[in-house]
Image (tube, rainbow, N blue to C red; front, side, top):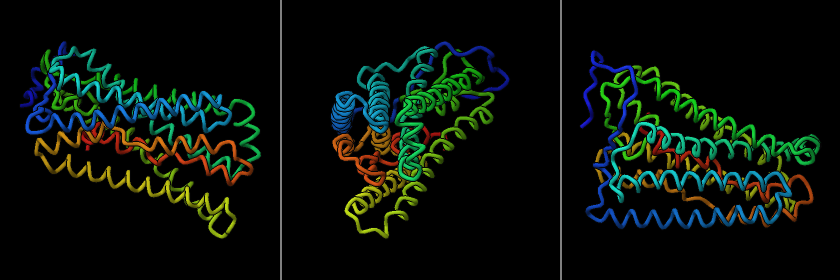
Length: 334
């Protein structure tokens, strides 16, 4: 059970220890098999992501999109390692007590991976839209003057600063005891805030607003860019345009599948309190079921770029890649 919130006994200093509540993460009744299944998926996904990164290095990042694809794979790999290691640490290793500093570091790793996934996806859609509709300025500013690296550095710096701000917010919370109980198997800004007994509602508003702002901007950009490209290509029967439309609708399908999965996870976390359901949803949230083979196809098709419309052949990064994965982090805030 959660610690009582007694504002009258709130302490001004930060707690020394954190106790993780892993009651929903026990490995009885077949859950060990579920853990093995998701671990296998995670390892396969990491393997493909490493292959994508190596392929991008092999091509020497000869196009901006190869740089973005590599960064997306790095973010995916970082998310898998930080998320799964946190869960394995509390289940297999049965390490349920952490220092508060360790908890903050775990939270930082989870959120920076989450932000980099979403922001890199946003950058890829901006790059794709710019290259197709404004090819001359794109070539002048991005392709020929190292603009892609500058944009990537800016985006990742934003993700870093947002993650640091989450840590700063967590240190401003007021706790009632020197040891606090976190109602989850991982440390996230939402679960830490729920364990506090002061400054709770105000301090929670900021991370909720930031998370949903990033998700909303990424989703809107993806949908708007796809809509513009479909409008541009739908009246043409050229083979390149037909392929471009096919890729756009593929992206749209992936976007919708991620969105509905996000809604499903929200409903399950919000209304169903069964431990088995919570156990599976937590693993779905941190296991990155991505489309690495599509990334390979992106890399393979970069040599065939002859005009601005065939750029779509390799701008296929799945839409809102971090939305579903972020579910386990954002969902307790809802």
